[in-house]
Length: 96
Image (cartoon, rainbow, N blue to C red; front, side):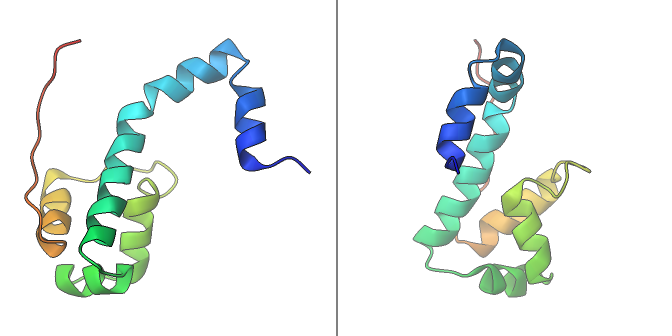
C-alpha cells in the first residue's frame, strides 16, 4: 500500500490536480497557522473550544479546513480563535 505522500506525488504528475492543489495553497497555509498557534500556546482543541465558547468538534472542523468545504471561517471566528490561542489576527493583501 502506498503512503499518503507517495499518492500525492503520483497525483501531482497530473496537471489538473496540480492546478487545483496550487489554488488551495493559501487555505492550507491558514490551517497550518491555526495548528501552529495552538500548539505553540500549549493548548488542546478542547482548551480552545472552551475559551471560544464552542465545541471541540467545531475546532477540529476549523483546523481541518472548515468541514467538507461547506463554508470558509468568518473573520469573527478567526479573530476568536486567535484570541483563544493568545494571538492577534492579522490580514494582509500581497501583490503577486
